[in-house]
Image 1 (cartoon, rainbow, N blue to C red):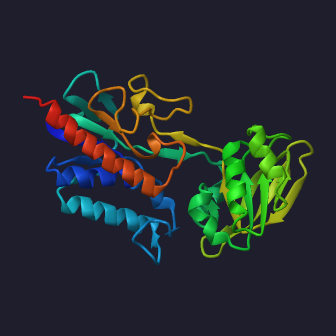
Image 2 (tube, rainbow, N blue to C red):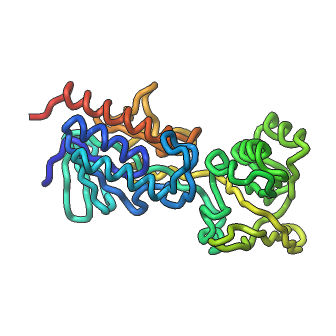
Image 3 (cartoon, one colour):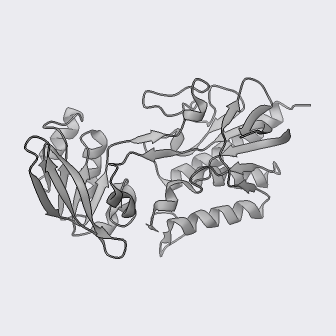
Length: 311
């Protein structure tokens, strides 16, 4: 067995920030980067809202800077995926296939995955006109026509936010009524810049990586009639899935499936196991808030190790 003081599972802004702080505390953290090293930033093009980059920065470039800074202070990063954990006793056990690591603390930063429509064109254009975050990307669509897919509160919030930039906002919903709260629906219906296309789904997104999205093909669910619609952006607001399957029945989750942390800390229901980033945040989902929670998790882990030494 390979013994560590801190193992970090996941390598987005939360996990890599946690590793920077843990490394500077001389805890020699080990990061398992998982199946998507760098998290959702790796499928993001221009990041213009992260402090310290007035000209903006590409998402993958920002992740690489996080990683370089972490390694500089002594973090060890492994491009491997954890297959099993045991949190029943300390030191905790973490498996990578047949290899077992033990650690005095574990920081979970496995993030969440945006739900998608399942279209080939959608994945090709993700970050090139297709987005799952209006707060992140709305600024790039000034004076443009954009579509929002969804019918819950998140879709209403995304559509309302986008009216600050886009000239036209259309909500595409597969049913003939929203499931969003009445107050959110009212705000949408009262906004002259938002139009709704009911009973419809997107079956194809037109465009290219070079020029972005140019339009979509819509299909009416009642009549099967198809409609070509020009647009400049497609925002997916059909939810996120927190990446918690590895911790089923081990850690407490909320009604949305996100890991629960105690109060204003990163502590989970198991002492010595901490969570940060989008895996425990169903509200903000921003790189900067994820990084901040990663800092919190590292500090919490450091203090826990000091208070609960293992011989």
